[in-house]
Length: 359
Image (cartoon, rainbow, N blue to C red; front, side):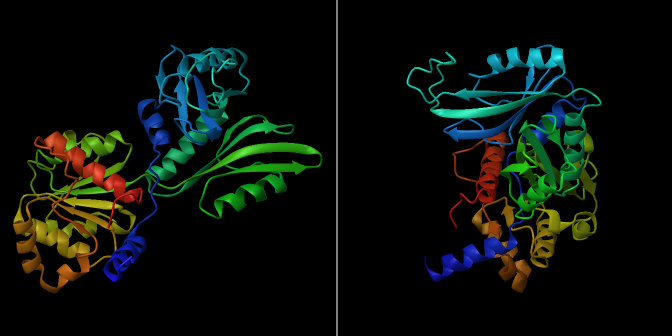
């Protein structure tokens, strides 16, 4: 790695705020605000599987689903088990091992070469699962971290999802040990001859994208990000554009560009896209980003010549943005429509958040 590459990598690491790209929790809560039915949670996997521990799906009373745990090969079987959970009101665990050549045991024929353990539990109003999901969703929507404890094997506790560990000192200590590392993990606790196995999920907040500019081409960017479960804020000085109804699910601010930092907490922002098509406003946005260490990703719409002009207007402030600025913003996918350009922008941000984009 050359010195410039090392400097860019170090600058990126220092400005990246932790974000969670698996937003199945937020999407579940958004599309099923009144939790009902049976909650299915992946609590352990081995080999190649479509989803990993912590992924969730809600199986509703009418047989429809919110979310996926596989490419569709397991869902029908899960629904059959879910009916039993719904009727009995008692959680259960089902396991799928598709690593055999013919998948003789389950007859699903998925060919995934993986194994999955799934916790199924009632998730109607008043259940522990509904309360746990709601508490976690409230915290992450506010940009804070949260946790969920999915007990899937125990001779002491009822199986299910909880937002807080139980009273057992041993279990609570094990949960806190996982969360102290700000990472998810499996725990196995044996206390007084009683055994408990749980998946402890650390939930960082989902990505927070700030869109500077609310023109027509900003709408598909916000829509694509919201479709991934990201938090989105839109800022524009033009009342005709800064209309909440144009950006469903996003927070919309209408104020002068120079006042952006008074409305948006940049320390909680993971990425920003500057796309107001107004030179003075874009300069004001970039100047404020230069005065703050975050967000670590700043996308700038427009050709290279416009970027150079903005850099000249910024003067010395442009140096503070050099390692964070992506312009022209987006991955080159040959996009020509606003929707295609939005896809290229959100794809690049996703890759950057995942550490997959080259410096």
